[in-house]
Image 1: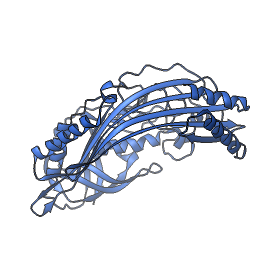
Image 2: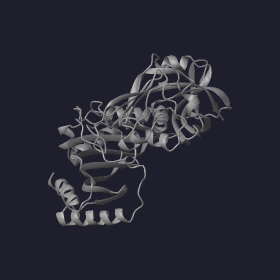
Image 3: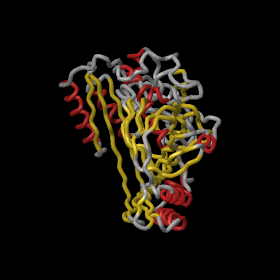
Image 4: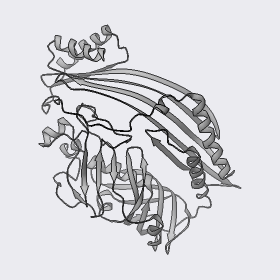
Amino acid sequence: MRIVEYALKYASSLGIPETHVVFAESRGFRVEVEADAISKVSFSKSSSLNITIIVDKKIASVATNDLSENNVKRAIDRAFSMARASRPNPFWSGLPEPKPYPEVEGLYDDRIANMDAELMVELMKTGLQSVKETSTKVTVMQGCLSTGEGRTIIANSNGIFGESKGTSVSAYLVTVAKEGSEIGSFALEDAVSRRLDIDVEELGESAAKKALESLHLKPIRGFKGPVILDYDVAGGIFSVLSSAYNGYFIWRNSSPLKGKIGEQIAVEELTVIDDGTLPSGIASSPFDREGSPTMRKVIIEKGILKTYINNTFTARILQMSPTGNASSLLNVAPTNTIVKPGDWSIDEMIESVKQGLFVRRFSGSIRVQDGLVSGAVKQAFYIENGEKKYPVKECMISGNLYQMIRNISAISRETKVKRGLITPVLKVEELAVV
């Protein structure tokens, strides 16, 4: 794109040795719901240019939505001035060099790009109708259906140039059931895809059923034992775990997994993969935010930690190779986290529990630094002698992340896509319920 080339050329004319440019544009519709009715329909469109320059290890960044040459020139002048006034980053060792990009399939769907507001409203109405057809006791408190179409260009002064476009559609419904004077715990159902394949009828039906299951809540006594973590909760566990094998956290001594490559850190049944090339993956792209190629890598294999995720900055510090996980020049993030499925059906997992909980939502904290897990469980069900007995009132669970992955006793063969995560259901032993 001409404005990207202009930015690189102008920075070079000033004698700036390192320049990194990211152009991004996006457009999309959004249909919002409140109290069983569509409340708002909106359209957004934006474009931006982010320019980072490095002079004598001094780093400065500017962003602008005005893509005229004169404004881009002023932005680079401002960044140059900021860099000269900054302190050097002693760990900086240079921008990445060009490498071939993989072909990643399924990132763009013309049907999403060509959707209009009328069609989206009809789809959302179908979802709302599905809720009411399932049960008139259920109210949709809030919800949203949104689409996005975007294009990204990344280039740097070393010759990197990458361009990618993609689409996405996402939906969620928050529901609650009421019977007489009793109100259940609210339920959440969501879906996201690169393709126009979200089933809004199924979404509405599932959201309604989850809400109905939360009526007639009962208190339980505290115990220590097995807890089955549904897809959303398991996804939250692996989302935090991804920070523990993040090269930035390793470098900053903020993760207990530092120095643990090659060691058994989890049960043999656990394998975790980070794959930025996954076809149709929500977090897939041919390149990351520094312009390095994405790739598939096994992070935990049969419980053994195999590697960390890195950008060029952290990889050089740790004397490793970049893995295509740059969220910026200095920061690292996972792409698609894939947890290998196990051999259990969810029914078999429940049948194996003498006394325990099945948890659909967790609201609390999980600390990367020491693994402390503490918070409230909602949409939970008491299990006794292999049967789900009844939904329970809000209670607390506590444990430790790094012990939990050692105490996994069952992994479901069914998996679900939860944004950038593909995760099964987990059964974890020895969690404290209070």
